Image (cartoon, rainbow, N blue to C red):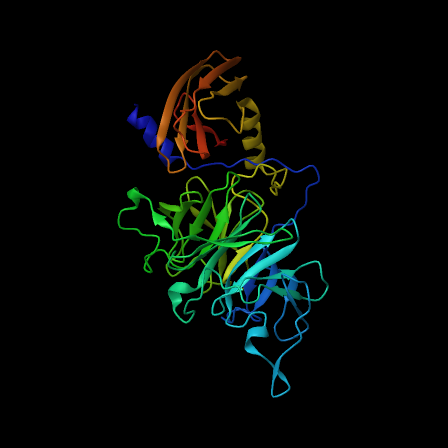
Length: 420
């Protein structure tokens, strides 16, 4: 293997490519659990926030208004308010009693699922209603009855996966919950998460590295936890195995990841509960952080949610058409075609070069952690060439990277492929 070539593979920054929808929109928003005021830490509000600017697009739930109705999620029947001294609602009937740090957006039904940290219960907001309608799964503790005063038991990560089901994980990873969103929902405790053998000293259950944060899903069904300490784990749902991938790079000192979502450029967006001068976008290949700045202070958040999946190829391109970097990247992409995508194990992918300069090009296939699986050399005569890169039958389903270097070992194109 050519070691200088491998050095170039890891050193060159990635350029992600996404495909526009048939009817594009300029919105790049998330649902955020936050507070009524910037800089506050009462996680009782839900706002829809523009990731580019930090501006509030919509106030979904405002605790001070108290204009909500409570319903039983099983029966649909309204739950009549129980009050203390005839005026104050019972604690358990306040939608965000005990605060919340875990939510997930169900696009199919336009619902925002969440759970309060100190109440062991799944809930959701019906976003179709002009005033907040809150549905609770009453008397159905998530994963059994446990002491919710213990921080290890708090649910702080939640997402709707590619299969349409919801997933939630408590701080210690001892309860991995799956819930369906159909007409007859089931809530199942899948058990505790397990560490992959290669994790070494970084354990999914370690409070010093792995508690808190948020969870996202990719298109192949894998889940990812980004902990409050900025460590990234990939979760295999079937085996409940958590594999440590990396620690997010270039985040400022003191930044804790508390909210995570995929933005409309396919990047990972991170927000913090205690850092309010910038949100951050993360390239999902290099895991390098770049600040998305704002002239004003931003809302700090305990969690984020939207419908986007990592590696999704129908996201919206928001870059301006006259941006020379965008135009140059598009031109490069049009000169190199990779197909099929997705691809089956043991099936070759075809890398086609069109009207490229003469010389020897290098085609590298790597897994999500950067491990090079295959490296091929392609001789291009100035017109066209085709390279076949076989996919190993033993490869697990998920994301892989095809990286192409020009004859000067400079990055030409980087593309993601899915093995399904």
